[in-house]
Image 1 (cartoon, chains in turn blue, orange):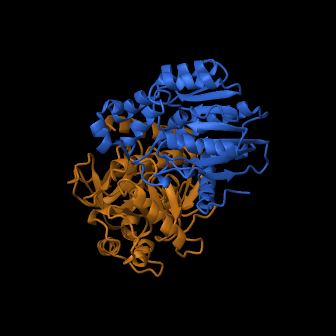
Image 2 (tube, chains in turn orange, blue):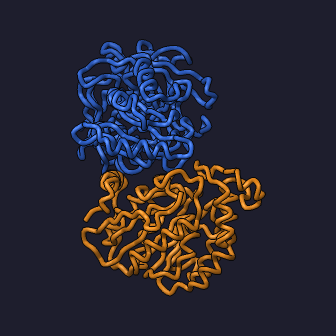
Image 3 (cartoon, helix red, strand yellow):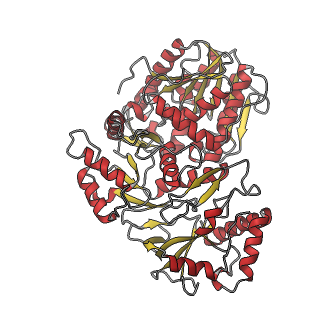
Amino acid sequence: MTPSGTGQVYLDRAEEPAGHTAVVLGPFGMTANDMAPLSILLNDQGVDAVRVEMASSPRRGDLRGYRLSDDAEIIGTVLERFPGSIVVSISLAFVPLSMRLGLSMTGLVAVTPVVDLRGTLERVIGEDMFAYSDDWLTTGSVVVLGHEVEGTFVFDAVEHDLVDRKATLDRVLAAAPQNPVGVVSASHDPWVTAEEVSALLGALGVSSSGLGHNVIEAHVHELNRHPKSAMALMNACVEEIRRVAGLEGERVDVSFRDLLTRARDLRATSLELTGGRT
Amino acid sequence: MPGDLLELWIAQSFERCYDASPRYRAYVDRLRTAESSAFDRAAPLLPSGVFKHCEIDRHLADGGALVTQSSGTMGTRSRVPRDDLTLMRLFGGLNAEVRRVLGLEGRSVPVGVVGTPPSTSEPTWLDYLTDTIGAAYDSYRLTTPSGDFDEGRIAAFIEAATGTADGSGCLVGPPALLLRLAGRLSGRTATLPPDTFVLAVGGWKTREGVVLSSTEVRAEIVNALSLEVDRFRDLYSMVELNTVLFECASFRKHVPGWLKVQVIDPVTGAVQAPGDRGVLGFWDPTAQSYPGFVLSDDIGLLRSDCDCLLAGPTIEIVRRVNRTEGRGCATKASLSGSLGP
């Protein structure tokens, strides 16, 4: 599987635009359509939303040959196409985004960000994939969140220095984001530790207990599996985006039942690749 | 969920409904004065007929509710209000059982949905459920609003299902429509992987009222689509129940850990032993906006284990309750009214 280089994006325009665009980078194993509920919430705040079909999306095909650098390439292409956006990264997407932090963006919101790729992956699959032998990596594969991933992933991560926490934090520090940033994390995330989040906050210049860090009470990382936590996550994400965008007034809320219906309708449109509502 | 925790949750759910809703409280108090051992419980079962006249109880529904209705095959339609928390729990339950019973761990399972898009006001439970299952996953609606099949989306769904590492996609919809789709896809070059799931939701009647045999439909679909024989699964649901029961590879409908099921003798009101037939009664504490304690319209039985080795009991549906049996259950409870105003 190779990235197209152009990326596949869905542009969902707000009916009453407030002059901001958010580029949404979904997590491993999820599609751009899975980001539809967040897109709807953003549109209701007046923010246009760009949903990106990441290289890690099952809609790109099977994920055996998935590489983080492919996602970095897609991110780069999208950010060049939508300069000056607020970038929203979810979970693993933060790792390839860290390679592109120097590109034009007016703000960054990192949601349950993976900072230590090696550490998080070990917690997810129960083994240190980066400790496997080269012989094994050349022919073997592991199942990550229900998707088979081959050793190419490891070789690519090593080649691009994406493995360790220090490398990711060094890139963040080097990019020295000057624009508003926000981090949303889960209080008891089993895959991204509080200490890792703290380290990222430090690198971003955000106080762990102040404005810019929004903590949801949750004991899981995969918040999409728990609808109530997922709603809390999305609302927290929207709060951070509103703050980063400098939007005034109250957050516009949507009931869960309305969100389901609207997301279904938006997905139906997206399948036609019309680029979303105009 | 350990039995004592489930009983505690059911008790808390009942107490909440009893304390918050004057209407429900009056109803329960009337039941308790009637002479019936079947309803001599802390959380009495409500015959599904009660929901024929049910209005949204503002004391129970938090922040408004979506009203879903039955398809009306037993006469008058039941109407059940679901607020956001009730819907979230429905979703969470679906997700959990897809993982537990179907073994689908993937975050974005491609789901092909066949059926009528739910109406915006008071959709039928079947339409809403089919649509909801699709909304939780990477879904492709394969039918147009007019009821025709969309070839473009069918092709996209097949490509997506074929592209997953383990070929695990799902088709979801009512049996009659799934049968039509299978006939349409039969013999094509590009077709679904053999381990694609086909999930049947809803009744076993065609639009013309012809009763379908589940065994025959299963065989026909599996053969037409060249699927592995255990990939066709029937789902048990009803509008009054906020939980869906999934069939396992041994074709048994598994009871999830948060649901209590008993089989009630329609004559004596006694609880039946596993393997004995009676009316199925459910205590579902996931419902918040209505009391989720329902005596169904189904005669069935409970089994305590299964060849598939999944833990917990299973149910087997034998037939629908006939009117005499239904009236008998209602009479036992001295039910002369409803939860209406």
